[in-house]
Image (cartoon, rainbow, N blue to C red; front, side, top):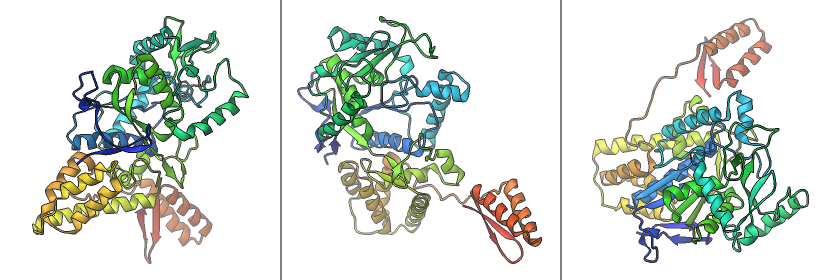
Amino acid sequence: MKLKLFNTLTREKEEFIPLMEEESFKWKRDFVGIYSCWPTVYYIPHIGNLRASFTADLIRNTLKYFWYPVKAVMNITDVWHLVSDADDWEDKLEKWAKRDWISARDVAKKYEKIFRDGLKDMNIEEFDVMPRATEHIQEQINLVKLLEDKWYTYEVPWDWIYMDTSKVEDYWKLMGPNYKKRLEDLRAWERVDMKGKKNPTDFALWKFSMEKWKRDMEWDSPWWVWFPGWHIECSAMSSKYLGEQFDIHHWWADHITIHHPNEIAQAECGFWKKPWVKYWLHNEFLQVDWGKMSKSLGNFYSLEDIKAKWYSPLDLRYFYFKAQYWNFQNFTWDALEQSKNERNGLIKKIANIQANQEKGNWENWKETFEEALADNINTPKLLSALHTAVSKWWIDAIEAIKELDEKILKIWLFDSVEESPIEIPAEIIALADERKQAKADKNYALADELRWKIQEAWWVIKDNKDWYELLRA
């Protein structure tokens, strides 16, 4: 069965043929190379961020399921990430260092650990290489020097070294028809202030150090004391670990208009190889109330928020499977509750099938699962096939389901359902007791106020004839 993936570069669903299988590919290669550009370690990752990490893991696991040898790289952006898309001054790591009263390097270390711990909770194995931008400064310098030697750069004195995109004839190719809207937006911005740039699409490679703003992170270079722009690191690190051409580049759909076109431009101009990447895969956002979930809007949930409401991270993992990666997905607590119930229902049914050993007409369930995965990693179709297989109550399906769970799902369908008792915090019991007394004293205003305090702590109080009952919200 042939795996097909939607390639943003061609706007088509294509049969996946890795470079190592192409006769025209001259470089020796014994693996499929995948690069995912994330995370920026300046704050706690929210569950929208984790959907992208989940997708990177899903792509890797799907390729392995189809017996491809894989080398997966995910970078750690621990230096210079812009607050906005403009090439302006403010840097997220520096900004959050001031907030936390620690150095930018310590900010990066702190939140990288939180990110890696989240991967473990989500049953996402660490990627084969997870390079830090700060540990690959020389590789970034080398690529900028390569572009400079080939006359693709220019310098704005005491400001940036820029990539001259007017010399890149196919700069817009990843955007497709969307480039017209992007160009209109850039021209509108150009009328305000170009800040020394020759073309609105030109982007920064290096930023020179400024005496009045001493940064935590800056390095010597052939040009001056500097720090890197936020595009150059991905091209530099991916080429080091995957070669100057590789198979798959993945990340958010919003990178189609800025970050990824800039990566392509600097890599293909620097290495003089096309295509730099053969397949571009993009996942859409996880939304809240059908709007964008983001740190800047303050409407995000972290993995700790999920666990605080007594959900397993694997319930969230199951939830992600319910939408195909290239579609938007909307998060609600009701949807997560449904995912939890469906996952637990599958676990119980599988346990019953194993206990009853009921035979049925043979169906090739492995082939059914492969068909869903081969269709651009169609996870809703995969879950539908899984539920159908379980509903048959046939022991014949168990081996295929076990392999699917071990290699793709990783939601531990063959474990027992956890029915652990819930411990009620002492402060919640104290509030409930105080409310009971307030009702006895007929102080109903205080009783209502205490009920709200209990609810704000994610508990529900139910009154009965003699006492009360406390339940998790």
